Each structure stands twice: as C-alpha cells, then as structure tokens.
Image (cartoon, rainbow, N blue to C red):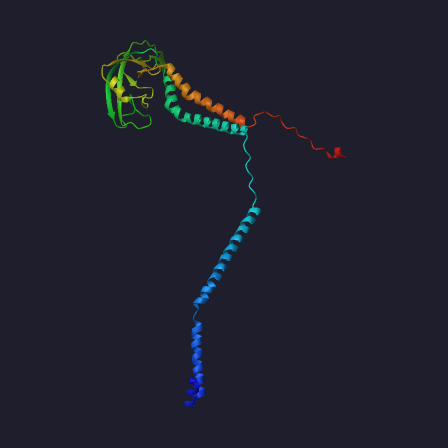
Length: 297
C-alpha cells in the first residue's frame, strides 16, 4: 500500500520500486552471510561422532598390524631347562677355574714378599746356634746417597731417605777358612774375629712390613751401644748378622707360600683340561687307497 501511494505521487515509480527491491536483497544477503549459531550447535554431535569413529578405526588398524607382525615374526624358542648333571658340571667348572686363577695370581704377590727372602736366608746359611753380639756403634743417616742400606726398614719398595746403620761384633765361634791362590802365590783368607764389625739386619733383606717388622722397637732394643744379645751370623758372608733365625720357619714359608699355591694351580689346570678336552690318545687314521682305473675295469 505504501508503495502504491508512493507511486501515485511520483512519476518514476518503476525506478523507485526497483531500487527498493535491490536494497532489500542486499540486506537479506548480509543476514545470510553470518553463521547461524543454532545450526552450529546442531552439527557439533555429528562432528564428535565422526572423530570418535576415526579413532576407533585407527585403533583397529593398529591392532591388525600388530597381529600381522606377530604372525610373520619368527617365534623365539624357549631355552631348554638344564638338568641336574649340567648344573653340577657348570658349578664345578666355575669353582675349579676360580681356584686356578686365584692361586696363580697369589703367586705374583707371595713370591717377592715371602718366598724370595726365605730362599735368600737359606742360601746365606746362617748358624742355627746363636752367638753373643755386642752393639759397637749406631749411625743415623739421611739422603738417598747415604742410605744405600738400612738395618731395618718398613717397606721394601719405597726409596730410602732416612736410615739407621747398626754395627755389632760377635764372638764364640770357630771357623776354618780355606786358603786362596792368586798368581801362583797362596794367601790365607781373612777371618772375622771378635774385634771386627758386622752389620745387624732385621732379616736378610733388611726390610719388611708390619706387624712382623717393627723398626722403632728394633732400633730401640738393639741400637744402644754396649748392649749384648744373641745373634746368628752367616757362613757365606760373615759380615751379616741377624737376631732371629730358624731354618724350619724358612722351609715352612716356602712350602706354604709357594709350593701349595703352585700345586693348586697345576692341579686345577689339569682338571679343567680333562673336563673340557678329550685327552684320550687316538690312533692314526687309516688312509683308504683310491681304486685304480685298471682295478675298476
């Protein structure tokens, strides 16, 4: 009605009407361009259903892939259970091998610490019956060049920076010395008498380790001038004297610290060889002669 009234008053009614219609269409297009919130709410459950279905499909595909890989992969064989005999064999081998290695390794430490001094003591041939020794003098030195030896030292591998020299004289022995010949002339070998001095050592090496060697007590006991005590001198070198000597102890040391570990090492090695190698002697294999062509005919 408004349009009709408007058209009655105006000349260009048709033109105005088309303009109004175009404006209404533009407004409708602007309204349709905005998203409808109700329509979005309606589509959300559909989107959730589609995403959940995709996740289920992915999980199913992953399970199928794993099952296929399990079927294609080679099956691991279960290790057979060891019998009682195999277990005993294994533990016996381990114990014997450990014993052989331990005994062999112990020789590396026992030989220089105990066996070598014991052998050197036996070679020096000390007298078993003690004689009387008197300390004549004591000298305390310092420096490497002044300490080439010491009457007592705790530790046999460290360098000497401080040392103590104890000299003694002993008597009460009878000793015959053979004569020596030099350039056709015969001379008597000099013999140590009661007025000559000898070197007092705690043992044949002059060193050791606590508690068997206590240099503080040794020096305080025998390092006082004029003190008398029993001692043993060497028949091979009369200038070497020790306070204690027992041949049986040296032999026992050699047996305990060398013979026993050595025998254990050898026996253990032989047992391992017998257990794991065929030591039976087999005859020479017989060689078959290839038949000749003439014999084959």
